[in-house]
Image 1 (cartoon, rainbow, N blue to C red):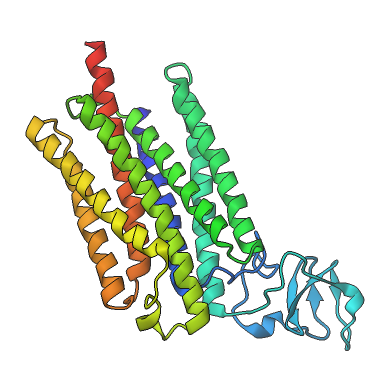
Image 2: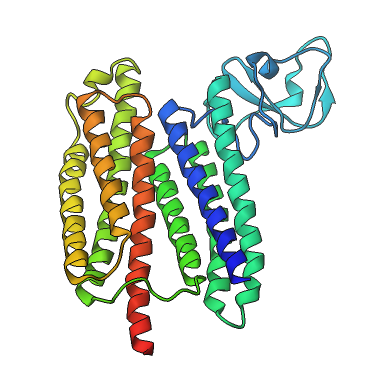
Amino acid sequence: MKWNFRNAAKITLVLVYLVIIAGAVVRMTGSGMGCPDWPKCFGYYIPPTDVSQLQWQPEFSYDRGQVIIREESLWVAKSDFTTGNNYNEINWEPYQKHDYAVFNALHTWIEFINRLFGALAGMATLFLAIASFSFWREDKKVTLISWLIVFGMGFQAWLGATVVYSVLEPVKITMHMVMALIIVALLVYLIYSSDSISANGKFDKKVSLTLWIALGLTMVQIIMGTQVRQFIDHQIDLLGQNAKDIWLLNPSLQFYLHRSFSILVVLINLYLAYSIYQKKLGHSKINWVLGLLFVEVITGIVMYYFHFPFASQPLHLILAAFLFGIQFYLVLEATKGKLSRKTL
């Protein structure tokens, strides 16, 4: 049963990472408002593919909640009805959440796929939580954390709705990302704690503490990265998509902090690797951390000096999310080494 639960947790973690990847693509393509309502998309469970589907049509049956674009505004059907030959405003009410009324089929479907992955991840966490009841007598913590993840996914869905309703307010986008990383950490904990194999490494108090510090620095770096992305989004609105060479001509303070802070992140992880190798602690996943950090730094350099090549921005974010997950696994490995040592 433990083996099955652990594999289910791994699948759930993969789905959560797919949501993060899809979210990164949404930001890269500017598709965040591809579906201006939530949880439906223009009032449909399956979104429209052409703007004509969002224009008022005579002798057409509309369902309650369906949306049309009229006079550059969103209008929502008050009830189920069939139109006549002329538009009758009594059947419609203005959409109240915001005044964004633009349809782009590509953006709509990218955002819809992002939401679809989110729904699949949500169902996977629910299945995992139900399966966790088998651990109740043996380890209540596994069950409690499994259900905490379910509530976390619900909160994440609510955050996603507020992001849409705020028309992509930067602070809420940052909260959305941080919550995703918290869910990743909880799933990594379930995967590690459900492993019957003993700790793969020796305990060292100094290294364990440094691992926690490195994890915290990564979280801070990711948050600062979202602030840099906010600045870039503003530059895109101001200068246009085709002005990549001048987006960072006069960068914000957050950019310099983010770039300088990366040096600290690299140095502390190099120190960790040196300590782990020298003391022969056996935490082999530090190699993954170094590899991810190397590619992460390369993508940052490429974005700055080569003016944001295609997919460099989402790749930078995705690598950071993977880095956080691996670092948290290392923290657990070091902590489990301490617990195993105490039980000897």
